Image 1 (cartoon, rainbow, N blue to C red):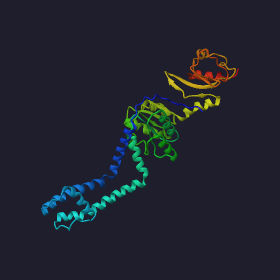
Image 2: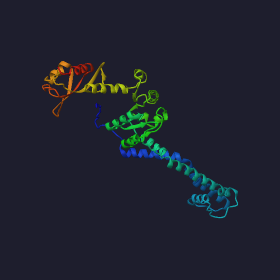
Image 3: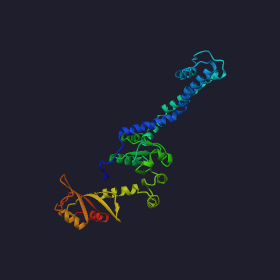
Image 4: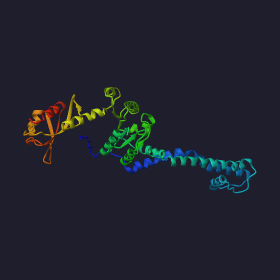
Length: 360
C-alpha cells in the first residue's frame, strides 16, 4: 500500500523537558488556585487580618498586649470552639467569638465541596493539566478533529519531531490512550470557540490543521483561526472540492486536501500494479513520483537508464534488482524485466510511461 513520509533534520530547537515541566506545574498550580482561592483567601484574611484586629481591640479594652505570633493561633482556637478564656464582656470582642465558627464552617464546607468535585470528576482535573501543558508549547501544530484522519496526522507529526496539540469535543478511549502515549495534550472542547483556540496556544502555533469530518465545522474554525493569528499556516480537510479554491483565495488557507483526491491515485495505481504519490503542482505543471515493476518485453526492458531518462523526460531516482538497491543509478545501468524503478516526472509523462509499460 502506498504511503508518504516526510523526514526532517534534527535541527529544531525544542524547549527542555525540565523547563516545560516547571511551566506546566506553574500553570496547573494557577488552575488549582483559581479553584480554591475563595476559601484560602477567606482563611488567610480571618486568621491574620482578624487576629491582628482582635489583638488591637483587646489591648484597647484590657490594656494587655497579645503577641503578634499568638494572634493567628487565637483565631484558629475560636474557629474550632476551643476558647482560650471566658467570653469577654466587650461587644466588639465577643463578636469574634460568635462570628468565627460559622466562618470556619464556610471555609471547610466550600473547600470540601471543591475538593470532592475535582476528586470525583477526574476528567475535569485532567483537562486542566492538559491545558497547562498545551500552554507551554511554542511553534507547535494544532490538529482539530482527532478522529481516524486526525490521529494519523498527529502521529505523523510527532514522528517528524513536531510538537502537537489536539482539539476535539469527544474521542474514543483507544484514541485517548494513543494520544497519551504520543505525549499529545488534548483540549476537549469545541475548536470553533476562541477560548478553545487560546487554550491550544493558537497565537504561538506554527500551523493549524482542521480535519474533522464536517466541512462547515472546519470552515468556521479556519475563519476563527485566521482572525486570531493572521500569520499561521492553515491546512484544511474538505469533502466538497468547490470550497477549495475559495478557501485558498479568500481565507489564506495554505492547503486544502480532499480525502477522495488523496486516495484516488492510490486506488488507480493499485489497479494497474504501481504505486503513485499525490500529484504536486510546481511552476504551472503537475508532477508525480511512482514505483513500478518493469514488465518483461516493454519499451524499458533492455534499455539503459540514461537513454530512458532522455527519451521520456523523466528522472529515475531509484533502481532495484535482485534485492540490491541503487539510488540515482548510473546512466549506463541496463534495466531488465522484473526490475523495480522509482520515477519522477511530469504527470502526463508518468501516465504515458505507465501505459507503455506492457508486454509487446
